[in-house]
Amino acid sequence: MKKPGLTVKVLTGLVLGAIVGLLINLFIPDSFETLNTYLFVPLGQIFLSLINMLVVPLVLFSIILGTAGLGDPAKLGRIGVKTVSYFLVTTTIAILIGLSLAAVIQPGLAGDFDLTSAEFEAEEAPSVGETLLNMIPTNPIASLGEGNMLQIIVFAVFIGLALTALGEKTKGLVHLFEQGNDVMMYLVGIVMKFAPYGTFGLIATAVGSQGFSAMKAMGSYMLVILAALLIHAIFTYGGTIKFLAKKSPIWFFKNFAPAMSVGFSTSSSTATLPISMEVAQDKLGVPKSVSSFVQPLGATINMDGTAIMQGVATMFIAQAYGIELSAVDLATVVLTAVLASIGTAGVPGVGLIMLAMVLGSVGLPPEGIGLVIGIDRLLDMTRTAVNISGDAACAVYVAETEKDRDERLENMNA
Image (cartoon, rainbow, N blue to C red; front, side, top):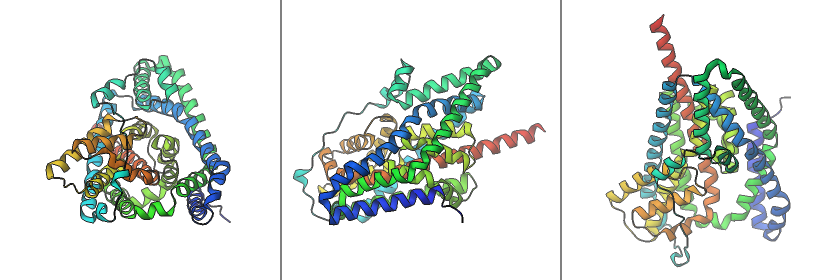
């Protein structure tokens, strides 16, 4: 009898965790804190810690090898332009979908919300210019210790370019990085054996702490975001795979499902990176050189799911406060959200910081975030699954276009 695969096991953990968390919250809420402290939280946190343990060395090794594997700096620049352009375009599409659905369904008019109790203190986000300047590490060792992904990526790209330029002189060092990457990927495989239990604990905590009452009160808002995320995944990413990569969207989502399941439970694109890269390389056939560059960059700056949340939340808060947004306001929301996705890259709590920036750009009270923050943890899980799918779709698209280009050049030279 064939054993169930990783996808089935992880999905089973997700479903069971959600059911157990909801049932405890409904029928024995007094016992939730004890079970959460001694069972759910340890399971989830052990899994997260194991994954986070691998992220920094894996990103360092993979970006170095990816850059060195591309060889030609012109090719690296071409792939970089394709990747960043794709992320900016899909982020724009995402927020337009969110704004459109929220304008039609009007979730902010679905109930009476206590606006007087809504509170949120927004942190100040760095500007785009500051983020670009901060990308260059003054102390790469400190960047590795802090887990500053943008700085690690830039440092690794420079090392990869140097290894390419020095060629045979650094062949032994390249081999060492390859061995280090192999060790990290082997450890990823071991950690993934614990994934069903970790996802069970994470989901039980998230659902149990929120409860049915919170989800019911914000039902319209949640449904609009979930519908927008589904539309974006099917049409934007499915369209990328179908028309740009010339492959089957069903094949893509079926093979990438294990990574999406882990992304859903961890709510972190960075934490899911080791698994999403392994799945993209092994199941989707993305070359390591492309996957190692595109996906770590996407985990840092690609925020389509967050952009959808911003669009829906902005309309929701405007409707709840009875404020009508003009066409100019909506255009400002789109522009601010796209720029904020770059300007706040790598900042903790980025989703809510970006939302505060968007609300401020059109004169909406940032305190309105207090209306939606209660269920943001549940929606963040879904947003993460969409975000990492976008990273993988971009990797497949870039890999296929680069393969077609190489084949055309070979035919011309033949």
